[in-house]
Image (cartoon, rainbow, N blue to C red; front, top):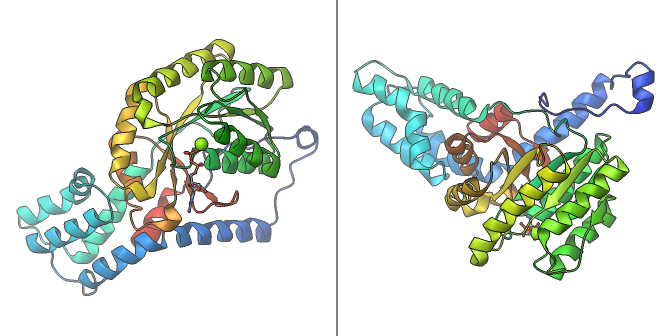
Length: 332
Ligand SMILES: Nc1nc2c(ncn2[C@@H]2O[C@H](COP(=O)(O)OP(=O)(O)O)[C@@H](O)[C@H]2O)c(=O)[nH]1
Ligand SMILES: [Mg+2]
């Protein structure tokens, strides 16, 4: 399941043969993660289930009216018109040509198409460079800082050393928030005073990471849209600065999206995608929304793999994204 998640080998492990976790250990932690993942999607699932469930209850032949109903329901789960059209395209063709298509086949086809949309190739996570530099990008309030802390906790659990850079220098509170997380999770934060040049903080942070031999640097960025021009220019500058200190950095630009904002997420992906090369997505607040379909839309439209989904406010409320589990949870 976690095939594109890279594992850190400790020195001790490198010397002695790897001890595999017992079967019970693996399955109990995997089951917990799966339960959390499923639980987080429950609102979206409930919405789809109550409406689609009825439609699909009896296996019968699909006609144009049936397809239209399915289309409407999928759109209410924030799948977006373009994505829904793409999902239904093969079935629509069949119906138009007068070929028999059963509702059970339609459902299976939907699942397969959705799985295909979500199964995008991605390099290993965290990046293989040392230090691997990851930027957290997105508009204000989507959960960048919280997600950074969750990812730090996740990476530490897998044996990676982590350092955070407080490059959202817009407000003192933003820096303090990251420091509080640093204390709670146990990672160092490189910061300057509020109002400092974010590029300078990135420079300082990456130099510190190199000096300390840290595995992964997590960069928290600002997201205030009313200063849109500056925001984008600042972001571009941070990216340039990072590349000057560490070769090829940033190695991964993660766009953080809030699932509750629905289709607005598409505009955010456009906006940031014009400024910097986006590599992946993290969708937050899946726990509180029936609009989980937005994950499929953004991944499909922008060809961005989803790394994690956020399922709450605590550090452990983050689940590695699993396309198969996602589709199964959404369309049982
Ligand atoms: N329910 C829920 N709340 C979240 C999640 N991720 C972040 N939040 C909350 O969203 C709010 C904004 O988060 P913050 O990290 O400050 O966003 P930022 O402005 O993008 O850095 C905070 O109250 C977080 O606790 C999530 O996955 N689920
Ligand atoms: Mg923040």
